[in-house]
Length: 365
Image (cartoon, rainbow, N blue to C red; front, top):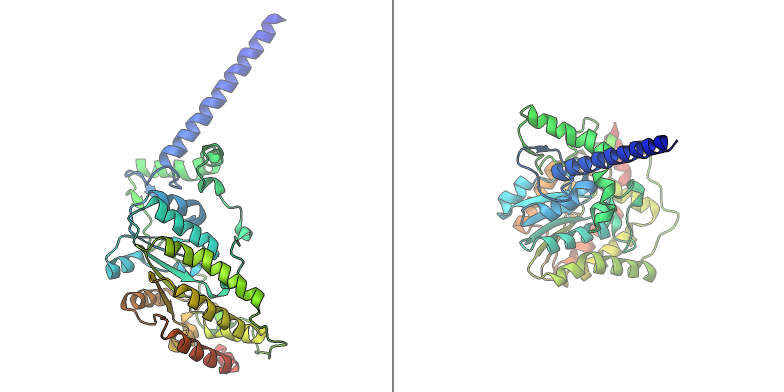
């Protein structure tokens, strides 16, 4: 009887030892390969595919070598860092967060400045639709957020190093490819998150307008009330202005995203067009308080916004527009200043308030 108990204890002890050894081995492999760059930059003998923004961006920000960055939502995904590097003479990374709020983007800019004292230039689209967000809004509707990759708590790293999907689905194939002689390296930032090659992506009126058959008159006009103004103030102050004021040696090239004329038509129908423009005007006045924020808008580039062939939906434009935007940022074209932004707002409001949106429907035919 005693012998059986002793053998059982030995067996259990042995199994526990084997289990612990396997877990340690698994953790060691994941930490060594580190496909999410949680601990270090890419190894020179492996090929790393960039394909998971919210899991990989923090590691890119922490461990890569760069002095400039492109950050933003899906509106920033089609930028090419090669074009930015050539124009501005920098070595840049691209870390887009599809659907990311102002807070999410700003938190990562602040982290980049903290971990990389060499950072000197940031390019960021300011999504027009997020101007009136709560300052602390986070997109929790985009799946589970990998907080364990963003903090400095080693204990919750178990969610990373003991993840069998990462071990078998990412690390082992990377090691296998290396053994087979696959060229080591990393997905280029030109290609990272770029959706232009998605075969489902189409441009033009049919894609932008969908099944829309008319533009209705608004049932009521939504005013720019004090409560909304305060939300804009807090959002812009916390998530745009404060980090610029705290880092005067960093140059921030920000621009308001140029949505298509069809988006403006939808806002007019909803009665929110004037509210958005008023929110924009107020946000601009706050951002222009910072000398190191170079603020742009292309909403009065009507040849761009009224050509639906530039867009895949009401908001998202093709990569040729991203290329044009970079060139404009470098050249200073369409930059907003204390002296010209009031006139810009006037032109924008008059144009989109009086545009014949019904005429867009004929383009679907």
